[in-house]
Length: 521
Image (cartoon, rainbow, N blue to C red; front, side, top):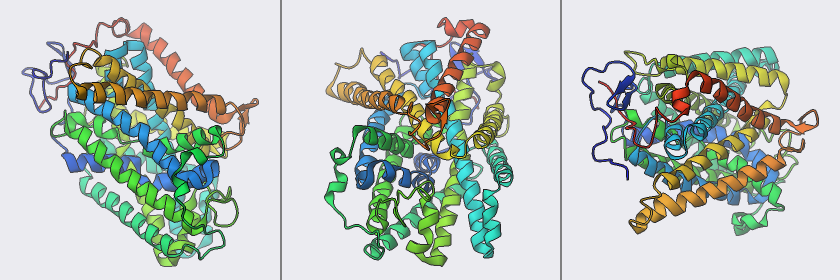
């Protein structure tokens, strides 16, 4: 049983330890403790998910897969996320370590599975960062065109060279801000998250007021909440994969645990608050949008292939009018920009933890002496994001759609493993009480099984070139190539690291008994 009573807590000081190292089995990472409270941590979670960005990127794609059952799929995607959140909460109580999924799965399943779980989190974050930058770039030029009234300026986003250069500039700016620490732009993050939610509320109100005003409008029906009405299981799993993507990012609350006040309990509470806000926002927006314009493939319909990858760009004017429509553009840009900053948190801190426990090169343990951030890991994540987006944009015209579909697989991969890690780690505690059985065993296991089922079905479906954007590589769906190729790349890197860090892979560095949290003052 985990000895939580004697485990060091965030803010504790280790005498004589000023750099990452090992003292009495405890690895110190050098992050700044007690920097964020409950409200701030919840804001970070919501900001990372970026609800307005998620909606404009996937509302149309989800409607294209499941039609009017989109609200039901939003709820279906929320369920496994909630179940997995309970697993994260219990694991974080026992082991509040910024390595989160990596650290926990190593302790539960051993070095190899833990390393691949950490890789899944890292590569999923790189994919999301690249998409965030892409959406921010598109809305930057759209907004510039709207403000100036010059269509040629807005059309600059269609110029591939301009688009890529703008995207790289935004990534560089976000990297620099993240390098300065989580509290550097705390006030800005609060403002941007509130702006997103307020604009969504205005959009919902105006969409509801205009229901029936468009040719494609649809009357509300409770059948929209029935997931069994989806036309096929393949369509349901595709929509579910997109829905799961829309909730991704709440675990950033856990990745910042070593920098949060009450590191063992506050992150779990913040994650649950963030998820409740998200599901409410998604349901309200999805229902209102369907009532206003429907989920068809013609005109303003959400599933229109010409606009489905960026629905707010098409709906801003018709639903909100010219003046408020610009506000929606601002909200999407703000959503993507804010998330671009906070999404560096999980990837940089996971890499920091992996290097601290010798699973990655020691150079990534570098923490800025003033900002208390994983400096090198943050910069490398920014460079990797820019490189990934540039390559994928040059290779595929539909990179945004395909990488989002691939992201769903990555999320199922590492969330699922983490859920099962909770069951295994606490297996000796499961029958101590009804609470332990439910929250440490049954709910995490059910969440893991659900995500495993989605992973398997999605992996099978994405072999077909028709999955995602419809593009293919040598007859194989490009989504499959992206997703599986990145997992294989992770396995190759793991084999290289196994030769460089044999002690970690022999299970000598990080074990179940290893105290995993300490923050040096």
